[in-house]
Amino acid sequence: MTSANVERRADADIVIVGGGSAGALLAARLSEEPDSRVLLIEAGEEAADPDIWNPAAWPALQGRSYDWDYRTEPQTGTAGRVHHWARGRLVGGSSCLHAMGYMRGHPLDFQAWVDATGDDRWSWDGLLPAFQAIEDHPLGGNGLYGKGGPMPVHLPTDEVSPVARAFIEAGASLGLPRLEGHNSGQMIGVTPNSLNIRDGQRVTVADAWLTPAVRSRKNLTILTGSRVRRLKLEGNQVRGLEVVGRQGRVEILADQIVLCAGALESPALLMRSGIGPHDILDAAGVSCVIDMPEIGRNLQDHLLGAGNLYAARKPVPPSRLQHSESMAYMRAEGFTGTGRPEIVVGCGVAPIVSERFLAPAAGTAYSLLFGITHPTSRGSLRISGPELDDRLIIDPAYLQSDRDRALFRQALEAARAIGHRDELAGWRERELLPGTLNSTAEMDDFIARSVITHHHPCGTCRMGKDPDAVVDADLRLKALDNLFVVDASVMPSLTAGPIHAAALAIAETFARRKILPS
Image (cartoon, rainbow, N blue to C red; front, side):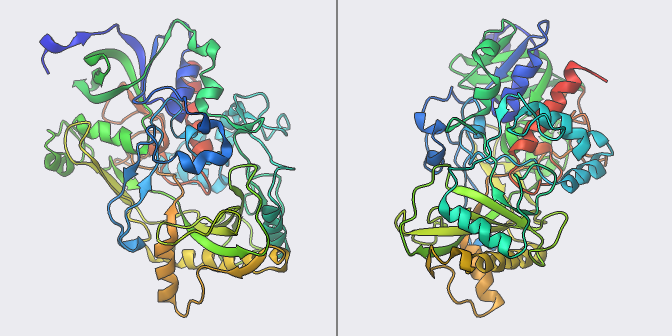
């Protein structure tokens, strides 16, 4: 691209690339400083589909025009299947598509981040002020939960399905503690899921942070329908961004750049800019400017078996929430262990199955979903070419470790143990899936055919103190002075449950450091 066909735009002090959960939060927080000119660049448009705010409609949002709908490579660990990865392409990002579960994680999840970075800021206690600032929790103000924050945390009561209530009773009868939610630091137990819902409607991150008052700030600009093709480097800094959108191809200049494009697009942008593994860039036809072998590696995701399916003996009423109403976390060895969870069983108030199975009619069946909390399988992401439309090659390497497969068997056994309890007898006509399994091989085959993504990709620009880590504890890309990555890609490892709350806490922690430097 030459200067002759580039229109120069006004400079910004901070450019945020990606208007999803982290980016929307940061746009609001960093523009609180009136002397800081903030530009948010988002590939999609503003959310407009009314179904987005209907909690029960969330499974039907996948595949619509505002879903990136990525596809993985065929997975040997899942019977050769290609998995669809839904990610939000609109302001608010995947907070407009996800199942609204809000779970901070277990304290030991964050100790792993401290071990990786050497920085206590990423511990449970270090992140607690960020979590509290995010939350508007019904129990907030007690020193543990936040009160009056932008994001509501709803604890369902009367709306909980009678099937989910029976599931909770069944788990408790096996020895699982009853919890007031998943966010106290104790995750082992059973409880209705905490949800980002207010007055019966989904609350997206854009709803929560990009309020009309925030959007009216003169120092904040939101540029939609625009993608960053590449970053332009000069020495050890980024000097410009090549942006493609309705305005054509333009160059934007900024003092600081914050990548919030997510675990797929943040590393992809770095690679298109010549920053990444030398061999991957060579194969994609991109000149390597900075060789960083770990960019795109360490890809992680949660899987859920879908599912341990039961025919209902009476009609199952439609969910008044979002179908997946309760998650029971536990140790793999049994229902009475304590500490960091290893497996999870969830109650789906609907016949939830993978594409390999035929789902019964709504209202005639329900599913128990099962999975593991901390998979050890590690995948990778790479670009196939230098252009925006060149596909991403996504290989999550699902179920490649013996440990993951063994824990998945235990998770399936735990689901069936709960599913056959007397507390569910009033709803259970018979088990439909998996049916009789006569060997470990048959169990593994069923798991391979039943698992679906839990929509938690992360880890591809991991933070750490080791020389190969992509970003440091301040989330600065180690090779450059003015480029930061602030999204789920920096997580060294998964939290036990849905990662959305942790992604918000990462962004809030970064914002606090930028606004109130230590």
